[in-house]
Length: 191
Image 1: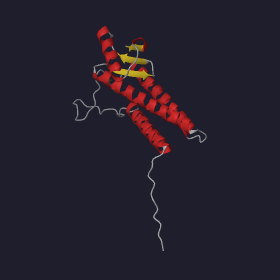
Image 2: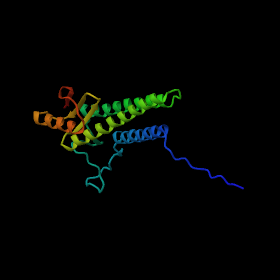
Image 3: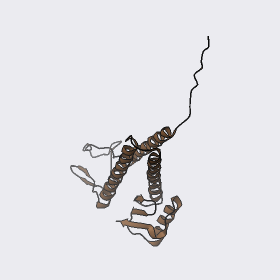
Image 4: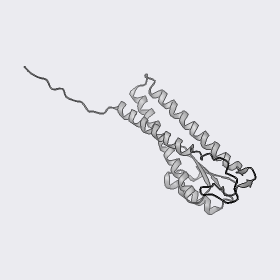
């Protein structure tokens, strides 16, 4: 009596690579969403006492009234918050469209390869944008947003006044992460 050995085939195919790539992209999108949508903890009104207590929250630059603390929000802070939400929403929509094309079922292997390349491109832009924004904040800018395409870069920074040295610093940071022609770089200042 012969017993046939079954051989386990562990060859990874294109579909598995594409699914793994989409999974990594989805994980990156979730991470970026968590980073940009982190909201500060809500606080309750502080107890009315003449002496401060341990753990009492004091906002820098906030006005204290008899009713509690009121924080003045500026238009530029609202702009950056809304712009981040819009940016995340558009990225999520583009990922959703690519996933619908990929899992549509009637795509050829060449079309699936193109879709996988688009997914890698989008995830690369998300990563570069996050890195550039973090570097600009680390260099002393209050807030920064970055929008990248294959041939253009738009940088929005929150400053009280942008001088030539700061513009050169922004351009240097951007060119350290990707190659963009100088005429295709736009720097916008929000006060």
